[in-house]
Image (cartoon, rainbow, N blue to C red; front, top):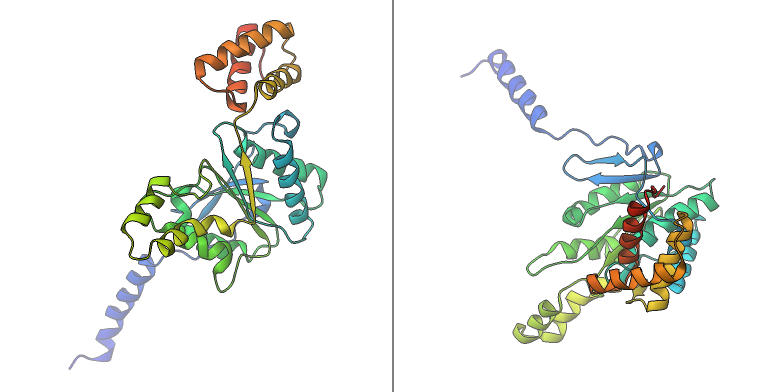
Length: 287
């Protein structure tokens, strides 16, 4: 029979090994370190972003209605009033993610005593969302949780965890968190994925409902559509004025049309890329 004294060193070694294997206790998120962060799920850390890549709210054209709606929703959230999760969906390059970042900066300038934190979570880190929300729940600062280009492919199941934490979990969404997402898809799922459910499921209606109900968790659906030529000109001319690019309007418009034709589209992104090209040719920094 083994003596107790000889077991003690063995048990201590086992305990030490288990302690080394155990993940370190999660520390505070340090939300006061900056106004914007990127969530790194593998490390369980928020990386501060000292300078956010963004466009001023006044330079976003052709999206007045959705701009005003998102601004009012964000303002209410900053003031501690009820507000909705928002899904910004629609045409590429029309300012969905730019609007989220611009609204965050604008509201913080408007309400400096109640600054919001903007936390970006990458699509592939969505499964870690419950862990992140649990930690944010313990903080006092209000947080806009932002996922850019959110969508799900066939056979992905992480959308189920997103559904639960947005609205349907036992604890619900923390009072100090709001979720903003952008997507080219209104229902966050490929159309052929939804159609496939209709053709293969025993009960097609129920299968499709589960897939599309994710977007129902967002109280605001803000649609972005392809812009008209007048809106495109307004974007180009607004950028040119903001950055003092001295070019006759007729010449600016003619070159803007040619640029859009080579890209096969008109959008805010195309307008910005055109203005960058003009500024480069004129030798002027966009700052």
